[in-house]
Image (cartoon, rainbow, N blue to C red; front, side, top):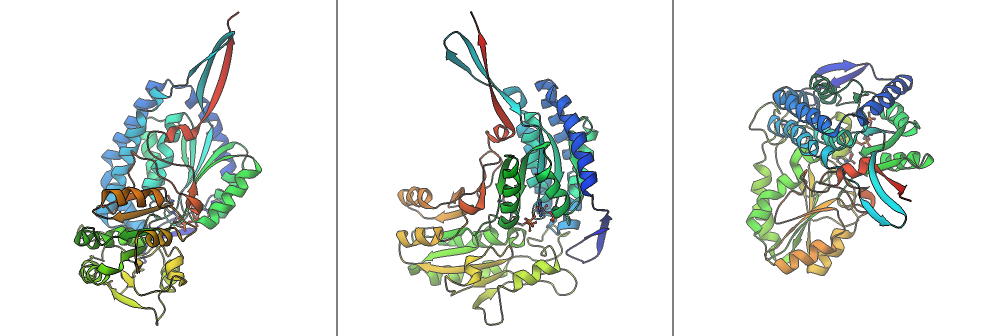
Amino acid sequence: MTAIVNPATEQPVSQLEPATAEQADEVIARAVAAQRRWRDVAPGDRARLLRRFAEQVDAHIDELAALETAEAGHPVGAATWEAGQVRDVLLYYSAAPERLSGRQIPVPGGLDVTFKEPVGVVGLIVPWNFPMPILSWGLAPALAAGCSVVAKPAEVTPLTALRIAELALDAGLPENVFQVLAGKGSVVGQRLVDHPAVRKITFTGSSEVGRQVMAGCARQVKRVTLELGGKSANIVFADADIEKAAATAPQAVFDNAGQDCCARSRILVEAGVLDRFMDLLEPAVKAVRVGDPADAATEMGPLISAEHRAQVASYVPDDAPVAFRGSAPDGPGFWYPPTVLAPLSSQSPAYTDEIFGPVVTVTPFTDEAEAIVMANDTPYGLSGSIWTGNVGRAIRVARSVEAGNLSVNSHSSVRYWTPFGGFKQSGLGRELGPDAVDAFTEIKNVFIAAD
Ligand code: NDP
């Protein structure tokens, strides 16, 4: 049995028998049969079912948010937003089935048309940090394309995915079009990668496991989308609104206790305004409300597990240059306070590694060219922010930073209307945005002779 533990209390929430590889095979076989039927459902009916699915989610937002708070420790305000995101993403992609147009291409001797065919069964492997949104980002466009989905949530956070699958059935989605396989990554996740009937893997998680998944998919030339780690820069130029940059910097990195692939965990500040920025950042960090996730006023909850907290803490040894830190409750729960490190060598693991916790470094730079070099000095390339009052500089720096999702004068860049994914070792392919459904289709070309 796998115990699901509330990270804020360390109390058990539930327990589950992890699925075996044999059970995974049975689930995949059912998904294959279901996909053949789902593919043939009229586009308008598929769209209607996705809208009904969204309505079911909408009617259970509070229940889903409470589950997320209990199993992942997310503050209830954030968890409510995350459940709402599942609804919104389903609604957004419900428009797609009726717009999956191919092309008519001029050729001699007949007619040539292309079709966007569903790839088939999709294995959707989801991490523990945002169990609901990340599930929906793969699930909704895959269903819209006519694929069936077998989702593998992280072992420690399966409850929302299991409940969302029940809501899909309540909405009228045919049996086995969307199934959840709760179990270990090394067992059932690996089986999704290895099973020849699974035609595409959408994986979100660590770069290390992502590399294994990519290698496994290569053996069958299986389609794969990877959303991996990050070590994003928050670049603050002297000509920026320094008050706003400092006020939002905690949210940019401490949201979800820093367990966020897009966390802006390296703040780079133009040297001339460093002291002022630090003076403004300190009260903003100390004001972050860390505590009971069930309290609507809470802004930051605990880390996911004791092991993960120990790993985060290893980046802040006793002699670490802690500039200042916020608070965290005593007693049970995997708490860690928001922590600001400065000054720090660019060789320090806290500066180079993805910590995936509420730890941020602050480092000065001298000019625009150096800021770009520093921002790009990482194997990752997922996200980042640029703060400046100069439009030309905003454009130059945004074009020069090697990352998939940037924001200018804003701390956030993930929106379901726009493509999301990484450069370099942060991933492969894109999710979200108007083209995401295409990633779950294959182009089929058909020539029809006219003579
Ligand atoms: P992991 O890579 O450890 O796990 C991610 C998922 O993969 C889990 O469901 C896990 O299952 C599963 N898994 C583990 N081993 C295998 C395997 N051999 N084959 C198939 N599946 C497997 O990542 P974390 O859970 O630790 O998540 C945190 C990481 O995710 C961070 O590095 C973060 O940056 C990244 N991330 C990236 C995002 C992006 O969009 N780019 C968004 C969110 C997170 P189980 O847990 O049950 O073992």
